[in-house]
Length: 308
Ligand SMILES: Cc1cc2nc3c(=O)[nH]c(=O)nc-3n(C[C@H](O)[C@H](O)[C@H](O)COP(=O)(O)O)c2cc1C
Image 1 (tube, rainbow, N blue to C red):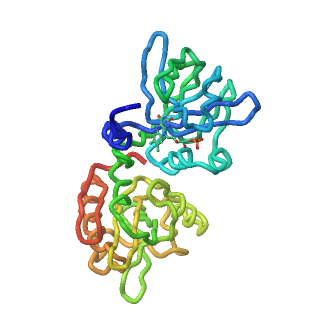
Image 2 (tube, rainbow, N blue to C red):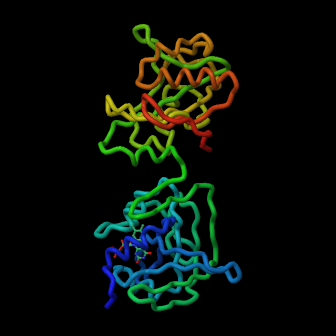
Image 3 (cartoon, helix red, strand yellow):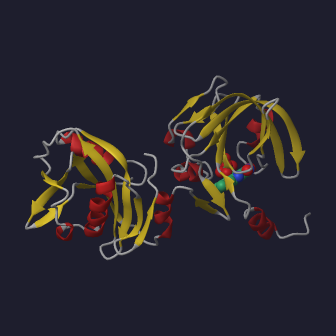
């Protein structure tokens, strides 16, 4: 029996910042198992070894104790929901995730930052966990950055994701676009004001496809270049993510019309936050150095542009 309070000890351990993984395997009986783990450590390059620590509380503990093979999926920065899925009981985790088997049958989850297919190298009993050492038999390293975890909360190195964490209430999210062709930008004039193309989106942080598809459906040939502005409009309880995009032709009639950026009056933008965004866009357009604004409709910071 430990002399420490388990909760306090767990909290102290939890102040160590880590990434988040999902450890998976295929059971003898053919089903797949997996759980969220932050006990991952890289161990050795030659031979290539890693470790994770499955606890004896896991419903899949016996499978991992017997497993000849397992896989470690390093979750990407937009995979918080997958971490929660594989840490919560009573749901069919694999029915709610896109994944495929590696050559040993262990599930590799789509979109992860990296994955390692392992054969079991050694197991060491360690109190209420085991140290499961795996020899890496294959791996994949993707460009996505990893998801972070510290003191029971997720964090992210990409500032565009962090704004969501500061909110207390759900908001209506919109994805919009500043679409440029040559030196003109696409706007719709309504009652003397300018509107930018905007659609309601359930997932604006990481995925410009909602606005991209909306524009394609209207016959526009547009390439999304970068996330340009991410902000809340607290008064209307709305959240906006605008993308900078380029169009291949000046035909935007189904959405609005192209007007020269230089003569466009930024003070006449209709949507929340769009006036200050357009002021910045006009000045950045002249030197072609575009930042990423993060904040709210009144204030915020401009960061270096992210890689989209
Ligand atoms: C961020 C995070 C890290 C975790 N790390 C571990 C770990 O390293 N080892 C472990 O046994 N459980 C870990 N857990 C807890 C398991 O993921 C959780 O208990 C699991 O869902 C239980 O699976 P089961 O429902 O199949 O028993 C972690 C949970 C979270 C949210």
